[in-house]
Length: 308
Image 1 (cartoon, rainbow, N blue to C red):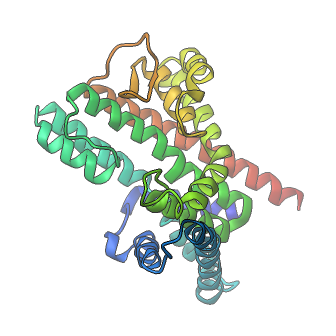
Image 2 (cartoon, rainbow, N blue to C red):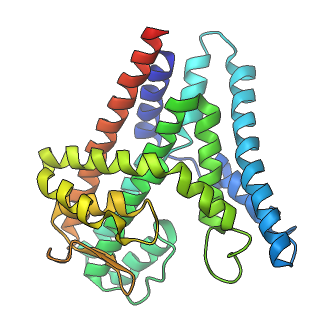
């Protein structure tokens, strides 16, 4: 029961306060540590792979132990434990920030300010090159980011918290952060980031599918649930990632829009191209899906607590 209350309070805290500045955020500290650790990586490919595996194991462990120690020392077993744990958990996910960043891109597109939309999208939401994207492609990339980050940056920390408490949530957050920084296939990162990318893939197997299911459920109220389920089944495997295609294909079906990355994949071939208004619809679906997933995890935690 305490974990269910902690999760509910953490969601409320995020909804009211959002994220602190990056320089004050624990995820920012994890990113800084990952950048520093890169500087110690060896040059030899085999050695880089071994070093990468070591960091991919050590960084989540450090994050888990730190969160556990802070909770135990600051909260103990007294009445402060619940708000302290909820505050810590709220920093492991970023629903309000995700929706806010997507809303900023939508506003820029509504004002026909493509330069600002590209800058906002490339700075806050995606790592791809956005310089040549037109208005529809910018809207599509934003919707994809909302769907994928709903899984990676919101529902995954919640699910891992339900599985193993704060240590599991922060271990996941550290692994996901390392993948975001090291998990690329180019020459610089291929060997060093191999373990980080594979760890993140494994850790997101269940969250990606839970997110897609929640989006389909939300679509029955704010879209087309049957179409979302059908598109999830048809297109989930089209992306190179074993996980990203699940929430993105469900979102494409729910909205009835075509998503994709030129030369790599297309989700919802038969649908129309998205417009800026569809970003707002995607955010509404993401909010509803998050509430559905959060409620389901809360019920599961309450049931576990009741049986114990």
